[in-house]
Image 1 (cartoon, rainbow, N blue to C red):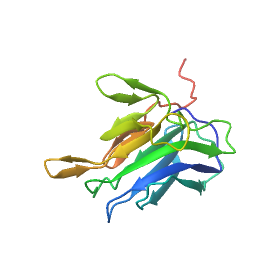
Image 2 (image 1 turned 180 degrees about the vertical axis):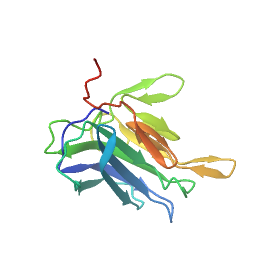
Image 3 (image 1 turned 180 degrees about the horizontal axis):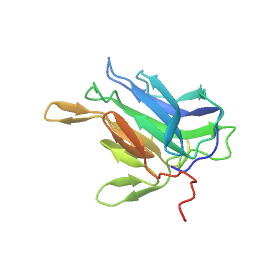
Image 4 (image 1 turned 120 degrees about the vertical axis):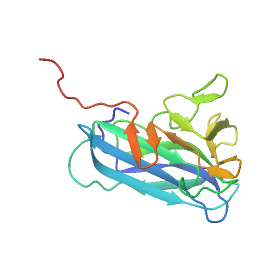
Length: 178
């Protein structure tokens, strides 16, 4: 996702419903000219029926400004997801940033044969929910049990695959003409 700001932190609201031994997480990958220069991962667990605020500082490894960002929200540990785990996110934001979290209030959805969250790639179980902190909707991510194999859901601004994350909208600001 094209992104040139250096936010101080990521914040928002979440309502966790994790099965014992499972946890969700947030992942940010900042890139410059295709190279990763900062990664941020924050895990969280719990099980409650109320929205909890979160705000985590982002520590940068150098003084570079990015040209793109990968944002991932995960309903469980993708290597060991537990059946029944889910999490609801709402009103996600960046602090001290000229650019904001894309569709961070999770209000803009399209209904086709299933729901599509505008500006996001969804893998696994996801849907809008009216169980929200504010606005009309929030994002609910839930694990899927497929014949005994349990998979965590994720919502990302990039394409995620085991062991890798690719930017959804590669952007390098490099001159590409002769």
